[in-house]
Each structure stands twice: as C-alpha cells, then as structure tokens.
Amino acid sequence: MENLRNTRGFTLVEIMIVVVIIGLLAAMAIPTFVAVRQNSRSKTVLNNLRQISSSAQQYMLENAVTQCVYTDLIGTSTDNLMHNVAPVAGEDYTNLAIVLSATQLSISANTFGTVTFAQ
Image 1 (spheres, helix red, strand yellow):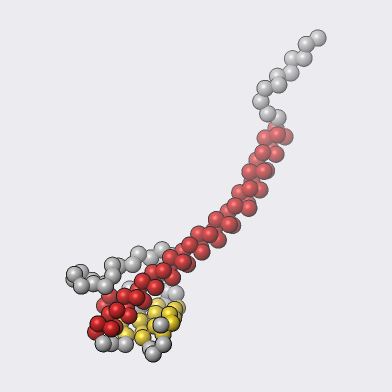
Image 2 (cartoon, rainbow, N blue to C red):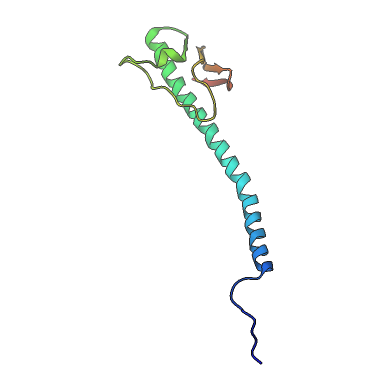
C-alpha cells in the first residue's frame, strides 16, 4: 500500500526551531545595535562641540575676549563663524557658555555638563 502522507511543507517542530533561532539571533543583535547607536551619538556630540570650540577660539581671537556664548558664533550675517549645529541626542547648544583660560577652553551647558579642550 502506498504511503499517503503528504511530505511537502514543514512540521510544527521545525517551524518552532526556526522561530527560536531567529529570536536568539535578534536577542544578540539588538543590544549591540543599541550600543553602536549610542556610541555614534556620543561621537557626533563631541564632534559638534569640537566645531563649536574651534569657532569660539577664532571668535575670541578676533574680538579680544575670553568668553562668548553660542549665539555670538552663529547668526544671519555673512561673517558668521559657523552654521547652527543640529542636535542628535536631545542636547541643547543654544545656552552654551564658552570660556577660554590660559591652557584650556571649557564649554558648559545644562544638557551635557562641561567639556574641556586643551589648547
């Protein structure tokens, strides 16, 4: 007698094993993705602050001052030192306080604290 069992398709156990494997792969990949994303955001914020630092130092040299604010560096005139910096992680650049001392430049804001760049 011929076997009438249909051999096409997958059994429930095979499908469950595939779903479990996909779940394990996702469980390993998601934390790595989150860490890479956070690292990328941190590096972008630091790069933005370095750009602001460079513009602030140029502004302070041109105007013979030792401190400035973010709004001194941007604006609508043609002699702006930089364009407005877009936030990437919810930081706020509009209330930056930038102070130049003998050996370092400090940038402070409520959203990320104080960052110091050595000259």
